[in-house]
Length: 410
Image 1 (cartoon, rainbow, N blue to C red):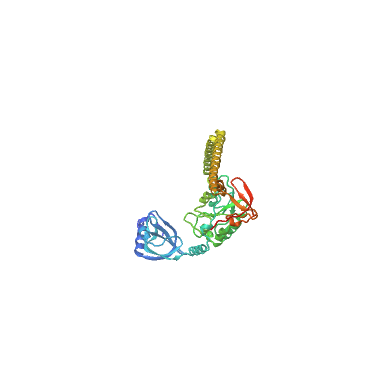
Image 2: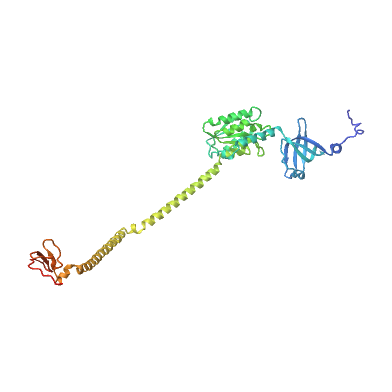
């Protein structure tokens, strides 16, 4: 129907607001409460605590909002790829002219196929120990050459090279070009990881890409890529997507960077910080050497001021005096020892003299022995006339012959 200036006055003309209001009344009255199943995508949680997301299936999508009070009652976390059944009322958002469901109930219906594959592979590799922190290698502080395994035309490679060269201007970077999205991405990335150590002087590599949907990042969730990272002969930094994106590659890699730019910060030090550190070490070394030299000088002065160096002959004199003292003590000791021994000898001699038969002879007695046998004559009956005898006196001895023997009468 063609409108003219003449008949517009007879045809009802609605404003956008009026038409939207009518539609709002009709839609909200027709669908006061519905149950809808679908997959969550584009999920965001506002600072207020309200949750905004899209429910979708193969053919359509529906905007959804969940107010903070309802979200706080959920016992599971909402995220993209989660299959859910939502209940709520349909309302029309007049400002944008769109309809949405205000969710007051939500329950999981399982998870999307990609998310399920991610979880299954994550569990499998975790059981094999590929995520074990003990096997992760440290990054070289000053890498000789850095390999970037990524798309040569993506924004990620520009971010990484800019950050690396800004932090460490003399950095040596080599780009290993691969496809990072699509069916050929995972095989190419895995092949690059298996051969990257063959590039001369490369001692660390960064493997990653910029952000995207789960489907866009799926190459970094492939098992072939995970095992290639695990088998890589040099440390690997995974830099896939944004901070909220976590891939299997992130879990296997020696170091995970939240973004490609952060990977550039992790792989090289900041030149100004290194220079400041070297300057600080230089000052500490100077101070340490100066302090050691001062301490050595003090020790040397203390040694030089010791008596043995200041007056070396004093020690000789002290030892000479001590030697003289020991000599005098030794002489006194020897003399005392001789005197004591002499006194003991004289005492013993006097004792022996008192017991000696010679002392008896001194008092006028004599000893008589037969000359033939040397037997001591104790009584006259031992002798016969004509026997020769020897008589021992105090002074000398006498040999005589028995003329006669006289025996005492009993």
